[in-house]
Length: 355
Image 1 (cartoon, helix red, strand yellow):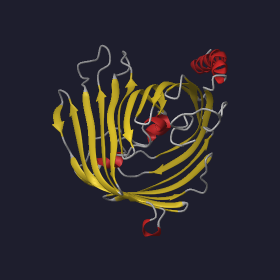
Image 2 (tube, rainbow, N blue to C red):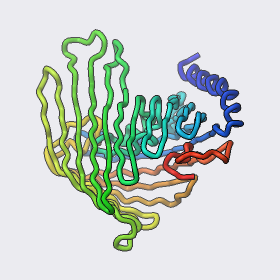
Image 3 (tube, rainbow, N blue to C red):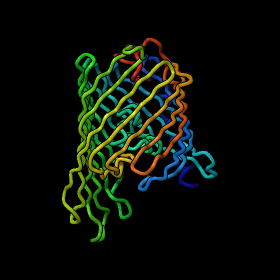
Image 4 (spheres, helix red, strand yellow):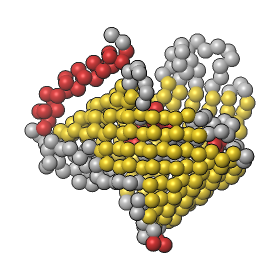
């Protein structure tokens, strides 16, 4: 039995083994089911140096069951199953298995948590969107403090368990926002620690890499006859060090972001000007001193259950104009309750939607 079959059998047996426990919980009004189906095509026609020309295509099914001890404590168990288009081999299975504590002021996650739920879409200067295709989970813990006008997330995400073949590595970060009416302040910090493998050769060195971003912005619905206008600008400071190779460097730059939306259409623009960053986990265009990205978005349908997005992107760096086309389709079945009488602060099947 190959590794894929072993993983599939384990997930199946694990889910079936929990079924009596979940069914018992149903009578206590504390059992639910959620699932998402996510398909994407992302074609990157990149020619600029330091970028990778490639096409990413796949479908991912992510079903999970949840059990709630009360309206604050939840346990989720399920799996991500992803299969790339054209791949004649087996797909990939990754677990969904985590605990969540949820109140009006605090969220806490611990385990293998879907990345979109835990941290959302981080800015590409922090983490390339390729990560959302290849690593659907945040593996570690996250705590979020929040109120009506404020939130701050602090998290750690382990990406490498040390062995004789794998280097120990993890991300540690924080992201937050404070709102002052239509104005806001946003902060983001992400550290990547790239340590050694067991019995590492002398030529192998530890790398410390990080980026911090502080922005001030304005966000308003209905302004200038637009559905939404969201503008921010601020300072980016990178940090990089290869121990025993070179000491800390701190490249700095200015970044601005503009988003305007009208009905099913939107335009987004990002500009970076400053020192070339050294961020191996960010979009590679930030390795340039000047970079501009222009996106034209069309959402042909968006409802409680389904969302589709077509994105035409243009990347401008000195001497090159690259383009990218992507289409993403997501079916959201996170509204299935086996018990309609659940009373919580939020719908635990879809944390970002009220019941």
